[in-house]
Image 1 (cartoon, one colour):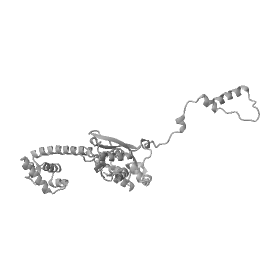
Image 2 (tube, one colour; image 1 turned 60 degrees about the vertical axis):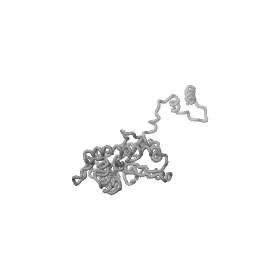
Image 3 (cartoon, rainbow, N blue to C red; image 1 turned 45 degrees about the vertical axis):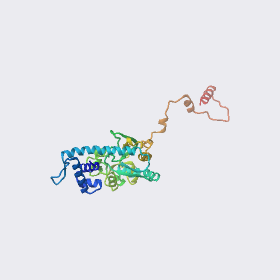
Image 4 (tube, rainbow, N blue to C red; image 1 turned 135 degrees about the vertical axis):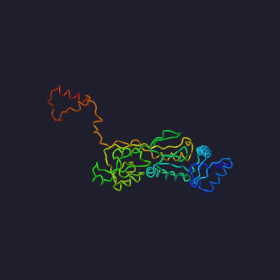
Length: 336
């Protein structure tokens, strides 16, 4: 059996058509058909039902496709192991990150990385959908939640705050009870910031599946949206809709497969991306500070009581005060 024929058949089984498999493998669809026919001949099995207008897998074809899928995964493990022991800083590393975060936060560290390692190729896939690191859909992923399963290494880069933002002109002319909210839908419909927005607005009049479009609608005066603070800072024309409200804080995690801990190219990218880590001291409370004396309050001591008593006025003439008062003042001064 030609093992390569099995790869062509597995691509057809995964995509469901000759043309889709041809696009995935960058060949002609006739090549896919010829390879599958050769595999059927070698195995002496009918893998495709060609009686209808659409090619369908036979029962044996489905079983062979399931086995081929496992073989493809094993082949990826072989490739992953080979990459993990490579220390040469060349090749391609794929990063999956939320689009808005990638555009604002990743550009500077990746530019610095490219200047130091010009032979290292880095591809940034800005996608709101979660990719599979096990299937090598990406080498590194940046996500707003920590993974709960899988043989993955995760490090916390920091936190991001989300607040309500709008144009100052919109806030000036619109009462809060009449605010229009711009929501998130599709893949981001379950995002925590959308959940909070949904509680406030019910069903928003305008919604989108991209935070960048949400920002654009806010800047156009369409209403109020829950936006990441780092993105709103870039848009200097925006104002906080409810400055007194506490922010929504979400953690940002950098994740990669644990068997890549010795892969030079991936670790070089990981170390560079750690430079965007946010110190915890930046997440301070922005409300009014209490008076300083409240923080320094303590029980008065004898020294305090003495120091608070009025001192005798200096005079060129000898004091006529009683001797007992002079002795008491002298004791207070010696303590102070």
